[in-house]
Length: 329
Length: 260
Image (spheres, each protein chain N blue to C red):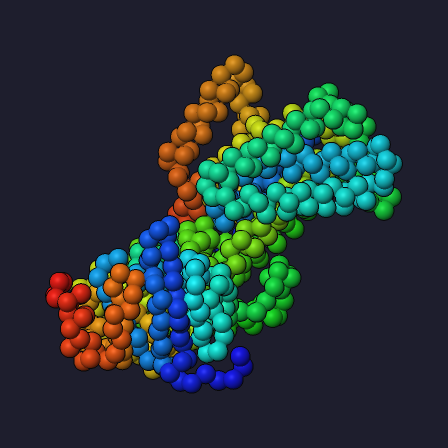
């Protein structure tokens, strides 16, 4: 019972920790890393809803991330739109495009769906590179204003850290509510048997489109936050390697686990930073760590964390029980 | 369309044809199932029994024909709309959601029994909690009905085969169907389990559900069915009470003579 209460409120504790974290960080550099980690967390939560829960692959997710980042940037700079309007337009465009992509591609299954989304990601990457007059081409698009809402500009890293992690908190909570609803169950049903799901009345095509668009929307949120933080966007950030990194975060963190999405994103953001100390060998060690994780934690980091958590709880409980007995009942 | 159909015509199909290329899987198949009865469909392998189920439930598109349940036209609808009209099925090769617990499978079965939308679940409105509570009661009742309540929190994949069959039935019952289509429910069950299944199916009919069952186990079919339809090579060769079918020379030649 107690562990249930703890588990249900674990996310509150975790976010309290996130709120307090900047107070103990040695320097601002870590703040930057954690901001980027927050963006990846948003991306990976969204992708986990699609891949981990509904079982639909996307190898082009970075495209939705990029589309919204470029949209809000270009509207703010080239067309002098207010920041909030550019953000809304970026979110809307990514969602709309994802809908147009979802309708035909979600009729595909398995590898074909993966190929379809991969192709889409490549197309967006090429457009960002080649439409030089609009996007600035390979050298990128500069001068995007910092995020400001109602005259309040979020220019310091500390302020931005809280903006990003507030978004993480909100999207995490909404996702958690989704996966614990009839829709969450329907998505997981689609994952194992579309046949059985539809026989029970689940409109599988509609649900797959919904979760695809929702997951693209999450990516778009990360995209606009990225653009107004870094103030510079270039195609390289939103290419195929990023899409693969996102998939890795989902799988390494743990499929069909929101906590896994958070852990996977943070781990893979922090790992390269830690490995910087060993320079030339960092890629080798990075790869080795991924392989070891997947060998020993097939359920992902979430499974590992869950086991560690349960083990420490039962240890705690044993001690508590022993103390109670010792207290003489 | 809204007038109540005659009891004999509660669930009926006529002129159902299905071709795969040049092969006729079903030719002019018709059936009439009384409300609250058990109709068995038997026939040799490849007779078209499962094809008929697939056509009724919308997984295959019939080339011709007409299926109605309680006055509603079913034929031509996709599977999820067929379910919405009250026809739910189980599968010959189990289609359990192995990534869920036992009770979550049944909750998913009640998908259509909860009425709330994205705003309700995203923001956890009172309606969300009310509907979920209602659904959970229904799921518990269905699990209790098939005797799996004690094992509700187990991962569904960990259930033994026989129990997975029962779970599929519980999941289907949670959809509160008007008609339940069971595709070889006794396949892979031992004698004791089969006997219990027979009782369970009769109890399902007592719940007010009309059951259509494809089954190979002749003892079971003869013992519990109200009527039996015999398919052979995609055609109906007999339809009647168990006693009538047992005596039918065409059936004996086509089916019973060969296999039993």
